[in-house]
Amino acid sequence: MVFFQYDFMKYAFIAILIITPLFGILGTMIVNNKMAFFSDALGHSALTGIAVGVICGIADTSLSMVLFGIAFALLLNWIMSRNTASMDTVISVFSSCCIAVGLAILSRGGNFSKYSSLLLGDVLSITKREIFYLILIFAATLIFWVFCYNRLQAISLNRTLAKSRQFKIVRIENLFSVFVALVVMLSIKWVGILLINALLILPAASSRNISENVREYHLFSVIFSMFSGILGLVISYYTDMATGPMIVIIASVIFFATYFYGRNR
Image 1 (cartoon, rainbow, N blue to C red):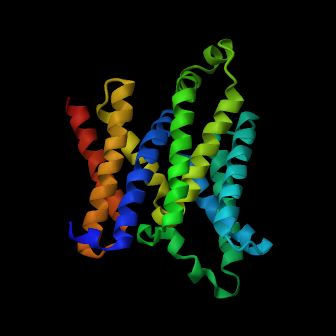
Image 2: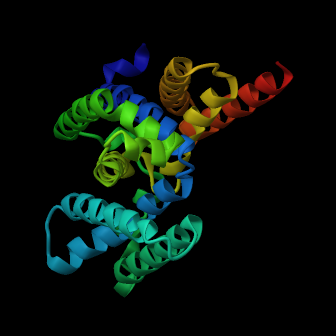
Image 3: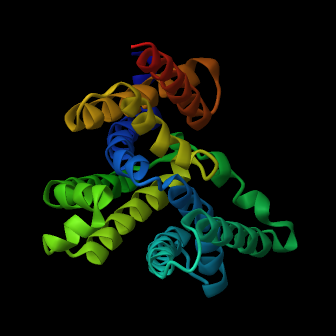
């Protein structure tokens, strides 16, 4: 293709091939466990993570963003396990608080324009080094999925049954949350805070509309996610539009198509 003559398009294409399967895989369990608010809150907490890095004088704010995201995910898990309030209420409160604190700090002195690109992301800015980090998290996520998926599925279906099988429920849930936090935080720069949750939820939700078993559920989720990512990148190149929003538009079209198809069937 013509756009492969540019290095930045090659890197963006490779990044899409790595990121989208991760969204497809993790999204299935997020949809199963009704954690859409959870992943959305993680995306919003990225601003606070960056703000913490700015306050602490950390040169690479990506590091502070990832560390804060992991801590935020574990804190949410701990608070929700206390059953002091409904899950959506707790997540909504934390999400609102984090985005407000992050915006307040980063906008001090009118400097938020430096960080506004994080709202929509820019996959065309990805570098070789960042692709290497994505490959590492992709490999780690696959290993985790192979060894822990059955336990995660059992916990999502029946926590009492999972506990009777001696599964370490809290540990497994925390590990899953850490991996979701890693993928979200490492993808924010290229996907955007406003769109990250859509890319996690839409492919899995579309797959759920038409799948008849767990294998189809995962397979279609990955296919829909990769198809949306690749087609969105190509269309955005030829139309000179932002890549992230284009990917979400395509994923949304797929969701509505599968919804009506599954309903009619």
